[in-house]
Amino acid sequence: MKFKTILAITFATILLATNACKKDESITTINPTPTDQIPSNYKLIGETYIYGAAAKAKVYAEKELFVGYNKIFVAMFDSVSNTRLTDGHFDVIPMMDMGMMKHSAPVEITDESIPSDKFWKAAIVFIMPSSAGKWTLNMAFHNHKTDKEGEGELEVNVINPTTSVMKSFTANDSTKLFVSLIQPDLPKIGLNNFEISIHKKDSFMGFTAVDDYNVEIVPIMPSMGHGSPNNVNPVFTELGHYTGLVNFTMTGLWNVKIIIKKNGVIISDNQSFDITL
Image 1 (cartoon, one colour):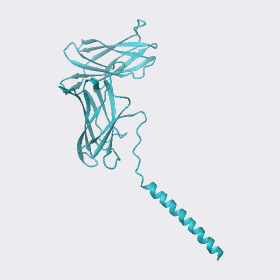
Image 2: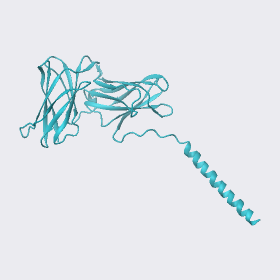
Image 3: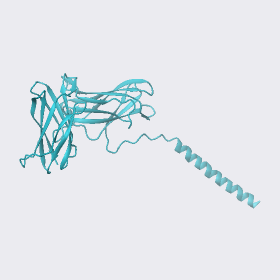
Image 4: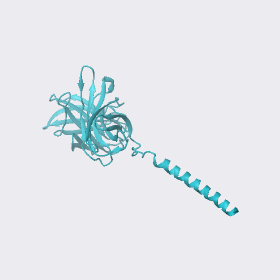
């Protein structure tokens, strides 16, 4: 009789423990599935719903948006379940509202319906800071999961960088040009990748990536009064990008002069970028 009592108590204890485990398991299983991790070097710029597409867009960049060439990374989420969307088409148009006038800016779109890293990508050359008006990203998305399309608008802040990385000017042939410095981002002594993008203004809403220019670079160290050898002039690659090599022989401030030619004729030779290492 005593044994049966002990057995009953033991069984009841096991039963309670089992039920407690089941209860804990049930709590665990109803927790929402965590969303995909965002790279630690991505800064959230802002988020907005894409109305009509049952989606929410989160826009990231590697640094605060600035006047010049900016890469953005857009993650899409189901607006109800908050699960990550990975199939669809994305587009974006940057707009500056100055009150009496509105205009866009040069933009590049990577058109992938299923991006490998789950981020839709674009690059925008902001041509003025937000202090001049209001920048918005007008985004469109076709959500293949629901086969719905919609649009959303996100206001963003664009700053003037300490050192200019974008030159806007009228060339000798009356073409309005925007030349953006992309590389080197982290300059060092020796050979560095040198990359610029060149866009021309067609209208307040239209900008064309230029593919028929010849570009030369002349690096000078003003404080020392000398240049450097072994530089490779940038050549056209794609989407208005020109890439080459620039050689910095010592630390300090360098001034890289940009000479632009079309059909052998110089259309600009008075623009330059300051680069400090």
